[in-house]
Image 1: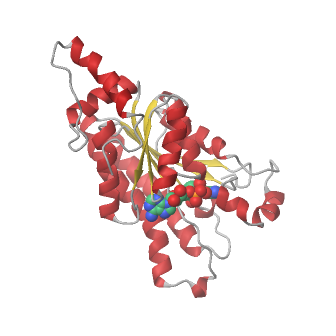
Image 2: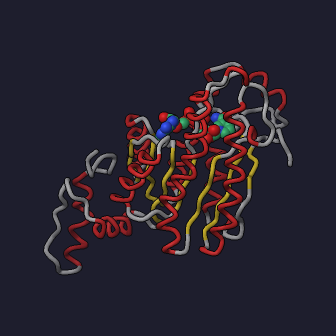
Image 3: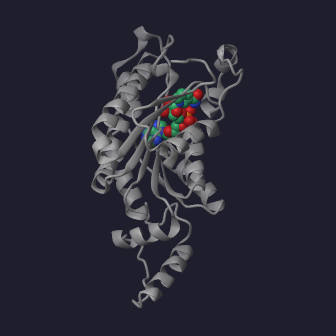
Length: 291
Ligand SMILES: NC(=O)c1ccc[n+]([C@@H]2O[C@H](COP(=O)([O-])OP(=O)(O)OC[C@H]3O[C@@H](n4cnc5c(N)ncnc54)[C@H](O)[C@@H]3O)[C@@H](O)[C@H]2O)c1
């Protein structure tokens, strides 16, 4: 991936940097494509984002896309990390078209190397990380007795281990600065599992426990760690099938959530209004589960 990938436009970057160079009476800086310079990236970050750098994993679709768009609207420079390069770039492009700041980064978050690679690419353009939204997820369904080891491991890698890996990578920045926010995407299934999704539900129960463990340990660094637990959400995968039509009968609010409504909860948790909230698992489920 090129230094520029998903970034507004090389022309725009130069437009931003040249006045800065002039202010400092330094020779005008001409960025090179091959060797991103971290100090320059930090200057760019200060200029293009009032708030800082937020990473959204699995940001190329559904809930992640809505979160990326919402955080960008609030002034964060957003790195959209996704396995699908096309989706990551498309969401970044949508955000840029709205006049906000984003980049798309393609990476496989199901391995430690893939996570390290993705986070370091994101950091090399927008600088150190202030906010991490662990959102990536897959939800294959299978009867318990038919789950293969490989399927179990894949669900755990994407839905749980990636949260652990991404958090370790990003916490290096947050702990050094003694501030930061992490929001993990849990699920109602992590609290009340149904038949056919043992691996997914177990991973989501793990996300809930991971959230609380990290919150307890990171509090001394002034880092808040929370989770959002959606019920049924109108995402492309959910709307493909018919199960939601039956599920809706059990939702007191009698409808699915919109992805933007999950993004609103995430946005609250990373905002200044939630600084005293940590270790919380916030239900956003239309009243399906009240615990
Ligand atoms: N949709 C719902 O009703 C619902 C309900 C509760 C919780 N959730 C949770 O919300 C999160 C997002 O769900 P969604 O429905 O928006 O998902 P989605 O399938 O619409 O999007 C997930 C994105 O993750 C990407 N991805 C998958 N594997 C990856 C990998 N190995 N590396 C990098 N990227 C990868 C996909 O390319 C995709 O763009 C998940 O954690 C999910 O468990 C969803």
